[in-house]
Image 1 (cartoon, protein in one colour):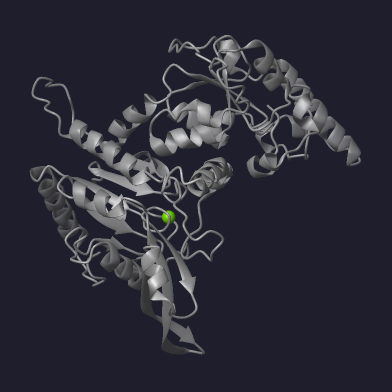
Image 2: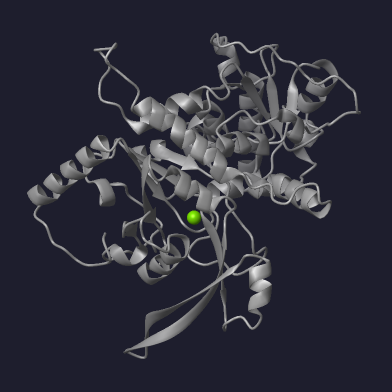
Length: 455
Ligand SMILES: [Mg+2]
């Protein structure tokens, strides 16, 4: 992956090179960090021609980058000049320069090689940080996914135990390598501009794009309360440094400790974020899914941060996560459970991005009056009673009834066969289950973002 040159090695030679790479990292006490570009380190937008007013660019610290991209027009290869405006994420220079002693950085982008090299030159003019370590869409033979399926194997072959990934998309890192991902909030500077290479990923769409956060940032920026609230790279740097410390911590007193892996260290860190919390959802979980933990991003997210999840409210619930204000659970919780936080789902996303427990106060659905006491739930790591982990019978019955109604409305079908394999049930449009009936007819914009949900 150096300089785009093709060097063909036998499998044995490649593995030897890889072993050398790992032992070099170990002897220099570094970890490898694979960095995405767009929306992670920078935001880029394409423009038609060079900018006229460079003073304006300087004032806003925006950079102009141009590349000569080779394209095929009517069977002929021609060079076309492409123009980009690039904004670096706040603290990018600090992030790279202050941590280069502990980490070996690589770039892995869905952009072309020319684009990647032009950006590398902008953020690392001397080449000392990346040293030519770039994987781009152009480097993947017969890439039909436009660089949107990324693989650590392309860099590390067999042993990626010393690698961590920083990216704003988790869907591009499929399989176990996803456990080495530090997910970041997508960085967006040119609002409403044409995207290059990749838009924000599905995980972000599911979160509602963090609109509440972005609105908060913009509001505060307008009020002059802050100059820039994006401290994502500082937070990532702190997590990386902590993981580096754990990876290279002295193991001499613990002879049973096996070889370390960044995935298990990162998992340990994530598990602690919501330890002791019990999350209940309202109006957010797809009603036709037999196993929400498997299928629903928010459910998986809560579990991956160390929380327990219960279907129903109980005296163990510390957080009710919802984007609505009128469901049965929300109304019950709001009136009777003063020590349970009622928070927007962006709270969970922010915990994931910040890799720390985000302040619930920012995400409260009912902020209350100034001076009103805030919830203080008791954190408890003991396992939930099994009945809190099961889909309530009333919800199941209501789901089945909704399906019957839908089939009858369609002129009837082989109902028994279709009810048996729950996972194959078709979605039948907005339903009311009797559980959150208060929210059933009150569809908000959020519901379009999150899909049709009833539990
Ligand atoms: Mg990206």
